[in-house]
Amino acid sequence: MKKIAILPGDGIGPEIIAQAVRVLEVLKRDGLAIEWSFAPLGGAAVDEFGSPYPSLTQNLAREADAILLGAVGGPQYDTLDRPLRPERGLLAIRKDLNLFANLRPAILYPELANASTLKPEVVSGLDILIIRELTGDIYFGQPRGIAVNELGEREAYNTMRYSEGEIRRIAHVAFAAAMKRGKKLCSVDKANVLETTEFWKEVMIDVAREYPEVELTHMYVDNAAMQLVRRPKQFDVMVTGNIFGDILSDEASMLTGSIGMLPSASLDEKGKGLYEPSHGSAPDIAGKNLANPLATILSAAMMLRYSLGEETAAVRVEDAVKKVLAQGLRTADIFEAGCEKVSCSGMGDAVVAAL
Ligand SMILES: NC(=O)c1ccc[n+]([C@@H]2O[C@H](COP(=O)([O-])OP(=O)(O)OC[C@H]3O[C@@H](n4cnc5c(N)ncnc54)[C@H](O)[C@@H]3O)[C@@H](O)[C@H]2O)c1
Ligand SMILES: CC(C)[C@H](C(=O)O)[C@@H](O)C(=O)O
Ligand SMILES: [Mg+2]
Image 1 (cartoon, rainbow, N blue to C red):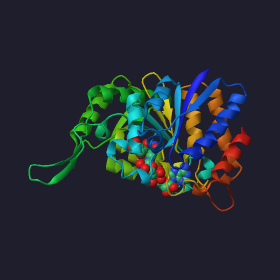
Image 2 (image 1 turned 90 degrees about the horizontal axis):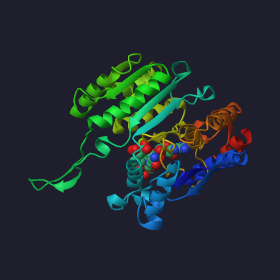
Image 3 (image 1 turned 60 degrees about the vertical axis):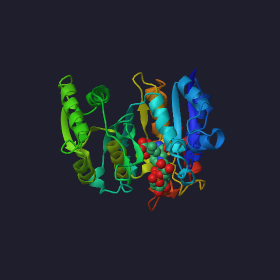
Image 4 (image 1 turned 90 degrees about the vertical axis):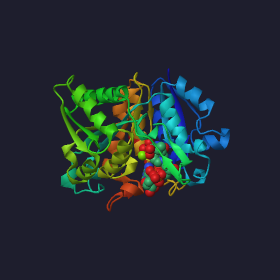
């Protein structure tokens, strides 16, 4: 029996997770050997336990074979002391479980060609895998803080840093992924300005010697941001650091129609993973049954594939998603004339029916 820790989180988190759980219930009913327990993370955990990553959640996550997460954060928590902020809980669980490899697939379903921000001919068939390093970079580099400097003025600082080992291990994930796909890897950096990413590029080039079949290219992040909206299909696999990957994956999501369509897997060295939509807790639509649950349901499919070894079930879920899109059902974020608008739970109903 495989164990899943489910962390609904904040904002729309509980609403979208509820739909993914309904999908898991169908799979369990049909014989899949999975069980799950719930625990709070982020603001919900601060409210209940006074910590964004309390020991109850930590223990459950450590024991689980996989973790499914909604989203964390919300304006009501923004004034808390920094260590108590919901986002710190997310960073803490990623670091605690060594989830260094974040896979964010930006795939355009043909039915959503008009929902994309780009013209159909520029995006049709889009299938990019963004691989984001997740436990290093300026997110975690020390020193960091806000302090009074020698002139008596307050100043704030973060440190962008990567060790060679951190770059090597994400490089291997990226090259291995490229080998299974189109054998094209674009490493995104800012090597013209930042030593950290100059070093990143150097290590990528070194690791590339072990993968002679993969064509490695390099692109500065500012150009990559532009190329993603200019000619996105030039990319197959992209690999980049934590902060650039955060930004580029949100950008890429709109090529697929909505941030509500972009799932993610965050993996450790052994394949254990945390699965979550790439978007946040969407406070503006929380509690309104409006959110698109498909990124979360597709994250559950990634969980079945990568951490639970259930490829058939993963494909079954992905096929159900394709079917509801083909049926013309759309949440508000991907709605277009001629389609049927559904709520978050309405989309869950449709996916369950399609399963
Ligand atoms: N992984 C995470 O848990 C995660 C990721 C990003 C942001 N956050 C947090 O979420 C909070 C809100 O952040 P934000 O507003 O910058 O980003 P956000 O992703 O929550 O929302 C940005 C916009 O996208 C929309 N959106 C997001 N998900 C959607 C969905 N499933 N369906 C339809 N529309 C959707 C929102 O309504 C909003 O207009 C912050 O506290 C932030 O730190 C958490
Ligand atoms: C909420 C925040 C810490 C997080 C990140 O920056 O990694 C989010 O934006 C994401 O993309 O998962
Ligand atoms: Mg983000």
